[in-house]
Length: 195
Image (tube, rainbow, N blue to C red; front, side):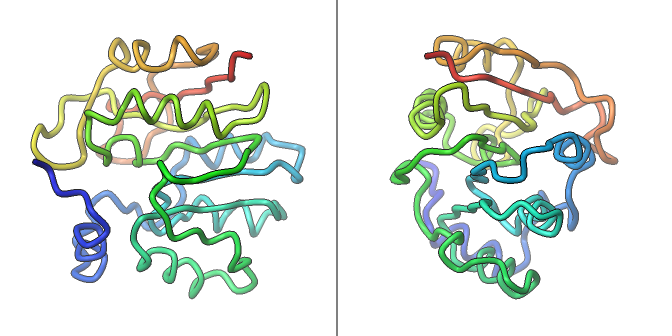
């Protein structure tokens, strides 16, 4: 059985074994955020990690940005980096136990970090957490990666099977603006909740 517990992720952060961490917001998400005009949107970033996306959004005037992570360390890292980020928007919890509703959920290296057996549960949970016509936007790997530890890869064909019954798959295409070694390995997604 794959151990993806709070202890597992906490250890990764404590020992700085965070190879997935870009140290900055990814270009595809920055460019998407720069197009959003409504800064009142309620935004969730699950499995947020160090969440440079939340930092960027907050610094651009988005005040309803929430991050959830099973490990406390990355939430503390974000709090230490971003003065004024509301404590109540830092949620130390398992994403699958989260309640509430959001206009926009951002996917950035969380889907690839959960046990692949939970992927259909992830699609359903995102659906449940989104308001009517809410959107899931972000990045998914279009690559065969690891079988026994994260990041777990995947393919467009596989993702369609999880999300198509819950969402209108408005965009699911290879990124043209991925960073460094992720070039050719990321799909940009924009899925709208079907009601």
